[in-house]
Length: 316
Image 1: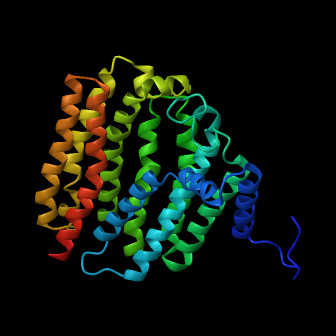
Image 2 (image 1 turned 90 degrees about the vertical axis):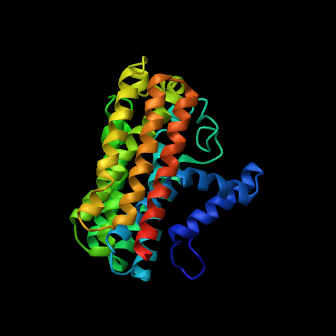
């Protein structure tokens, strides 16, 4: 690509926009449709939960008052990092996604997006996230964001095809954004931060195992070593879902014990966790896709519920 008339080189953002426009023209699709595909690559449904978990960590790290500016940059940096990691994950798994019914129509395996460009966009988003968090929040939070990207892309993602323990390993990068929210508010690692990390790490197991059970045949087509694929009888899947959901109940109370949250949060989070646990017990008795979907729905509602309790507790 030629440089602009003034001799300066194109910025990454300009290159991205120009390439998107070219893709739209070449394929006969509208620019809006192309941009929508890149939004899909950023996994907004996952990125929103990740950003919400960072908000939870920030609340736990701010028992006496919120710094609105720091909160804003933390949320933006977290969302950019999550979107970048999601995009790069799509790039890494595009060939496997093409083999699965659930993912075959995603932008990359369906041929609607260019892998090289998607890689550039993903790297750009992660770099922007770290570049914002480092000077505008603090170095520790930026390091945790970078560590999240590295662990998710180069440890967890490859392990999904080699070991049934990949979901357990994935809880670490999955929970680091919550810890990052805490460090953004406090500037250091503390008991409240590790409590938030523990909540998110524990929550992820029944969440992702229920998803893996629902799509176990698809994962088998994609050659993923998910637990329901490796052990199709469901005994280990059900046992781990119940075990981690049961563990989540006492772990969720840790912010109260560390004085990072108050009694209102504590009174509300226990029945929330027990309801989540009940859905896993029901699944153990009837291992159907419908029952697994109930577990998944409960897990999706759990994080917003937890954040709502933290907000009520914080304001009151």
